[in-house]
Image 1: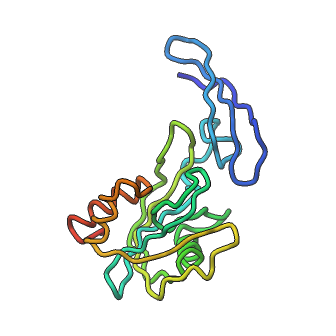
Image 2: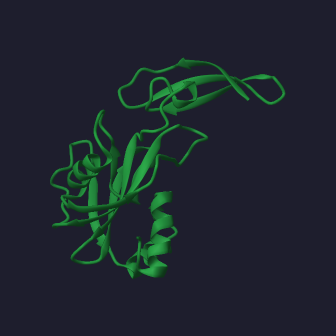
Image 3: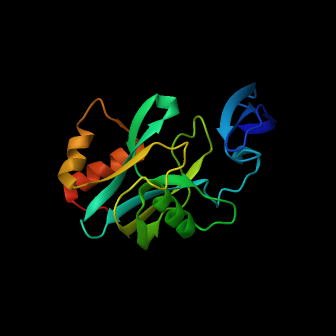
Length: 192
């Protein structure tokens, strides 16, 4: 497999489409369409060391409950349950992005960043978007007062029992990363 060329198909601020021309194992020329936040996309020699976004697995220190959000997602046409998350600004550290995004989406403050993953990929068949999963403790009162006009986010706290209940609701739209962590939290009462 070898990448031959990449053609940018759109020109938007946060996300673009690319036609990636490559040769398969048999030497046939093929095209794959990729959405990317990077210009050029990672397959064209991008930087794999930095993440596009952070996803925060936040434990509320006073209540020992996980922080979740219920957010309207346009591609789903409805509300999805997930963890607070957001893009990392140019030059911003993971810790700074976590502090900023957690406050913007939930009104909560980071007390301690416990650990974070390297950049990981959740849907590499469609996009090269990478996220760092950050485990942290937080404090404060959950609020959506700092949401921008383009966000419809409702933060809330869940116990292990409530996490299990949410995972068992077949009609609930749950982010894949969130579902996996909630399953572990429901079984053990711990996330780190």
